[in-house]
Each structure stands twice: as structure tokens, then as C-alpha cells.
Image 1 (cartoon, rainbow, N blue to C red):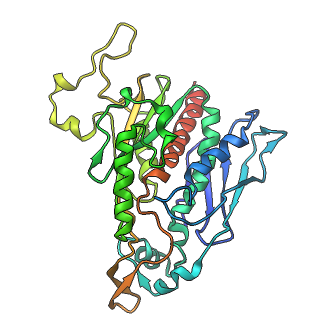
Image 2: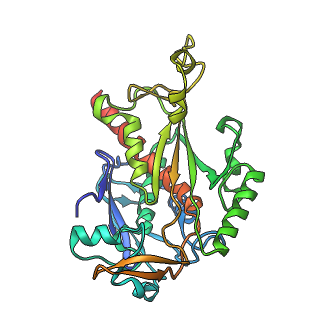
Image 3: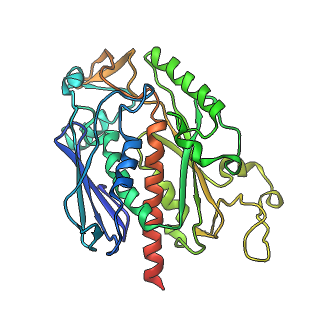
Length: 353
């Protein structure tokens, strides 16, 4: 299986399945001498882990990370950093009914067509549980990016949108509620919507907005390795992501050039930031901001038509513990992937000088 690694210089390779013994990864390219804050890494994992509130899956996993190599006396050595996270609360029997059935909008059918075999327990390698390894690596990347501020938050659930621009939000309020929306009133409406959807045995999608601040000008490579292209790849690699836009995004397509152009100030900053902090694929020193769209979780606790391995259409109903909305747990994943991209480009920039 290809495609298990992300990054060039700051590189993460992940391993493991949802219902295997453990998941984990290897981080290569992290500079030596970085003092590691283990509590901060665990705190990031705790933001992503299941069972943290009534609006997410009730699978109970401690998600405690164990570092196996690459760190000595609390500092990185410059060698590969290996780590693992034990799977402690698998309930594989919850998936026995889909052993020979392909669930709608899951990776069951495509995995079996590609590999001729699949781990049907929780989706195996295609499970979003793999993203816990990304959060570990992203948390370490954040510590490398000491001056950069990375804040992601829930900006919509279904048709409920946070209408305020990010400049008017207090990012310290993101963790004040279980939906991770920094506006209390909007957060309450979002939570109520998810609870109602959950009672129906259904699921709902939403969006996450991410803001990167204090990113210096000059990160990114022209042509094929543009900074926004790599951010887009990073976000689209996350389970359930269906869309990515940065800066003015699709709204920019409605504007004229004079409306959209970011005019300069004398110091090189710009009066507006419809470019989203990136021009020509290279950061310009302004805030980088983007939005990521997540589809509704494919497993619904309602009867639906599915296809089995004999080519028959059959009725099936989801079982087990599933998120009614993936968005609140995906917030730290979005931040982690953004940090991995920036860490890679920081190292690449220093190499090219």
C-alpha cells in the first residue's frame, strides 16, 4: 500500500488499523535539540479522542501516546521519532454484519476492488482513527513552529453558520464548548442540531475554519509545490473532507479585479487580505485562512440499501459507536495537518538559502 507518508523534509509515516493492536507513526526530519512538551502533545490527542462528549462517538479510548525512539532526556535527537497508541476499546463484533456487505459511501467497496481483501472492522486502515497519529506529529510540529499561531474552529454545522469574521472572534473560547465554536450562541444552536440528528439515527456535516498567524513571508514554492496546494492536499487527505477553499475562495469568483485586489501598504502588508495570505503560491506575511468542508458521517443508524459481495442489493443498518458529526473532533486534526505543512516548508526554506 502506497500513500502512507506525508511531507518531504518534516515527514510523517503512519501505520495501523482501527481495530488492530495499535496505531502509530514515524516522524522523520524533526531537527535535533527540540525540547518536547509531552503534556502538550497528549492534550492535543485528548481534543481528538472519542468519548469526550455526548455529541461524538462513545468509543472509550485513552489515546495515550508512547514514544519509542528519537527523543533522549526530553529532547529530539534528530533521528526518526517512533511512537504508538494502543487500541484499548475495540468492539469488532459490531461490524460482523458487514463482513460481506459494502456500506454506502464508505471505502469498503473500493478497498476490496483495489486490494482484493479488506479489514471490515471499523473500516481498518480507512478509519478516521488513523488521524490520531497525525495529531501527535502535528503537535510536535507546533512546538517546532514556536512563533506561529494555529487556530481552527467549527464554523458551520448543517445550515447553521458562524457569521462573524475570524477577526471578531476570541480564539480562547474555542475550547469553551464541546462543538469548538468560539461564539457561544452559535455553538448552542449547533449542539442542539447535532443532538436532534443523533436521536434520528442520522448524521450531519459541517465546516472548519483555520487561521494561521505570524507566518513569515516567503514560505512555499512556485508552480507545482505552492503553499496553498499543499495545504489543500493536507486537508483533503483527512477522512470525510469534501472541499477546501482559502482566502476569498469561491466567493472571489463573483468579484471584479478591482474589488478583489489586495492593495499594498508601504511596509509590504496589504489593506485587505482576500488572497488569504498567499500569492503566487508563497506566503506574503498576512494571515493565512482557509475553510474545510466535512461530509455527514457515512454510517447512519437507519436502514439503508447496500451491496454485498455476491452482487445483491440488501438492506442493512449501521451498528456500533459512531460520530453523529465528525466536525468537533476534526478541529485538532485540521490544525495538525496545517502544522505539518508549515514545518515542512520552514525546513525547505532554510535548505534553499
